Length: 167
Image (cartoon, rainbow, N blue to C red; front, side, top):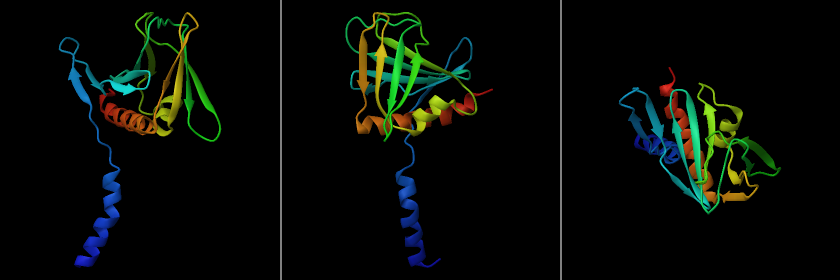
């Protein structure tokens, strides 16, 4: 291969390397039940934070919403608003237990092919999420452009890594 072809090849491959995912996930195995869990750790957002965990059976998005009097139960909802020319909105119920600590769960069954909402979170930027508690009070988490792309990268990375956990 001539030096010119080598340089040209490197210039073509360089953009692909620059967009590769930087996966910073933690992996731990429960010493009692021997189940492995992969986690993103907490990721700060405007109005709260999120951590995403995966086991062999589920993928759990745990949002921690800032502020006082944030009570959620199984009737609490979250409306996810995606960025784009037409308004795309998904509603989801809290999958976690009743609490007044501002904790809200989206839990997806872990399968080889992600569910449509999980797939949408992996491919489309979320503009904001409106959480409605059991007292009808709303709390909004807004994602900045940097947070939007970082969340897509985190979710995609976790889902791809979590495929190794499926039994």
